[in-house]
Length: 304
Ligand code: NCD
Image (cartoon, rainbow, N blue to C red; front, side, top):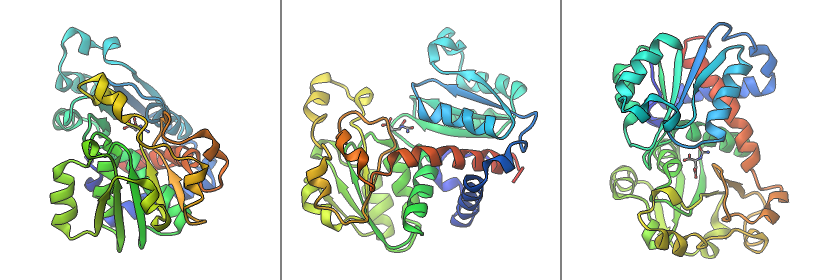
């Protein structure tokens, strides 16, 4: 049985197959509308979510399957003190596959070790978010034609932003991808990303504070929100939250084919005036999220 707990659970070939399948689905979603007839997806969300949970649900419904689950810890037996291990043992009797989001790093891994069904990590604390990474990879591949040879700027909360950690982990496996990490000192990537993932694999990267300085070099700009819920003090969050605001004047400094991605939700880090720029790709990215999750469900259930 296969799970998806980290983006590295799939090698580059497996990823390519999955992205090819997602692409095929995007061209004709109706072709796949009965692949999961009679199958059930459980969405176990112990933390808030809009896109991830609903795109998983949409994905399963598009495949002809059904969904069940909960969308907050207090509406589940976690509120009574049930462990994740016990919950997943029970859910394994009710569903064929499950997507789990949890505020504690590693919770989906614990669940997978006791599970009778494939477990998908839909975000664990400030750690990883592999299905957002699949979405990001599909978006980059669709926009740029390949996952090799580009410079990506990752901007904002690189410390707590789990989508950033998963994306860096994945992209280092492709050829000639250069990273520019743009953040205030306080929100730089965790040491394990800098030392083990980037330096440890001889990947070209730099860390800068000012977005303006690097804008002309970028092929992709990956914006992120400051992760309010992971801060220890409100004052600290307030000091950081307006650090970066991408607006029209900054977009003018960028290449004509530099695309802007954002996992969403956006707070104020991308001004709404940028939405009409043809290089703003974040809403398209959200649409790709449904196709990759359809492809992932099919792959983990062995129905592809
Ligand atoms: C992200 C997450 O949950 O980490 N959202 C998402 O799944 N698209 C990003 C975020 O919350 O900032």
